[in-house]
Length: 237
Picture 1: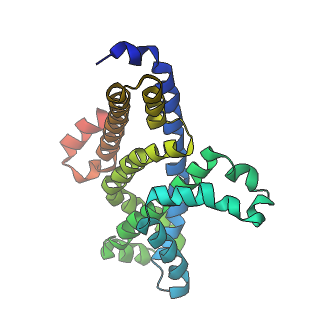
Picture 2 (picture 1 turned 90 degrees about the horizontal axis):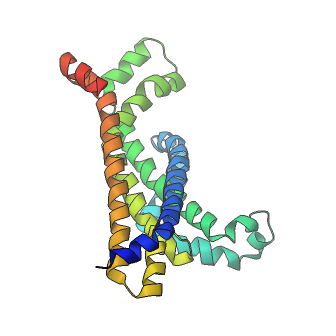
């Protein structure tokens, strides 16, 4: 293995790392903001409120992320209405198309994660909130959503990791992310082992960082469920 090849071209991987982190972070953030109200509405018993959200979730969970990205990147340019609108300066850029596809994809998965956590809220907590005279919005803000976020955290951490790994598809539409950097190194020096093994190391490092941060968050959010002495010690770590 020729490590000098990687060391001399590490700047390309650093640039790819920046693009990967920005793409994943922004898409996860916007996707979460999108998913919270959709998850609340998804629990509604009104079919006409549920139906469009369910269709959105089923489409993005039922089709591959790569296909979704191709539809956005290659497909939207075929519509004159889009090319003539103010949206075209955005959709003609590969970076925005990837961000758009990633956001809608993670938004669909996160909607179902939060919906399941909301529906798993203990009935006693809801009854207690009603007994104190809380409105529906106040109950959501103080009781249901905070409790749902705690239950959803382990599953959502998996979604963060899946989104990180899925972001490697951005390289197929000319974006230089971590995988794109590896493809450049491979095309220049014909060294697939060094190029893609280095990319794997970067992805593993990011994954371990995500797991570490989620564990720290779990310590804080689940401290009230542990014995008082253990919770106090762990909360200080």
